[in-house]
Length: 191
Image (cartoon, rainbow, N blue to C red; front, side):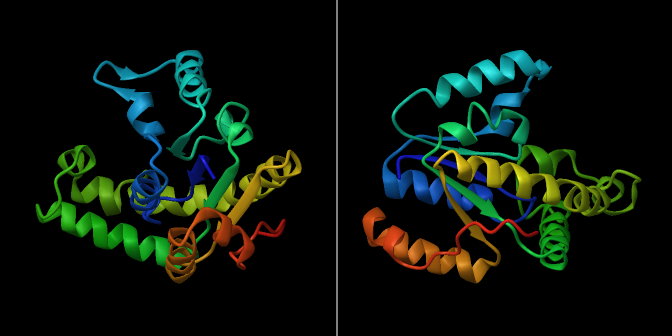
C-alpha cells in the first residue's frame, strides 16, 4: 500500500485518516480541496485534473477528496481505495457538533472563519441540507464507480463506522502485509 485514494462524506474523518496514513506509510498527503480552492477561486476542471494527475504519477501518495470525476487520474492509479461510508445520522451528528465548535470559536480553519449559523444549519444550502442531499445522490453513484475501480485490480476498503476505521488502523499499523491478510471490511456492491 503506497498509493492510497481516500473519500467519504463530510465529518467522517477523511483528513485525520489521510494524515495518519501519510505518517504511517511515509508518503505525501494531498487534500484535493487544497488543490481546487485557490485564493483566486476554484481551478478550472482541466487544470484541477492536470494537477491531480501530476501528484498521482509518482510512486507513493495519499490523496483525499470526494471528486469521483477524477477517478481516472486518482482512484484508478491507486493501489488502495478507502471509502468511509458512515450512516447518515452519524454524519449529521458530526457535522452539527463540528459546526457548533467552529461557531463557538473553538476550531480555527478556513471553513470555520466563513461559517455562520445560517450556512451551518438554516440556509437552503446549509451544511446539513447539503450533506443529506449529497448522501442520497452520491452514494449509489459511488458504489458503481467503486465497483468499476475494484474491477481494475485496485483493492477497495469500505469502512462503515468509526469502530471499523479504528480496527483497520490497528491492523495497518502492524504492517501493510498483515493488514491485507486480516478481515478489513472489503468492497461490496450494495449501498
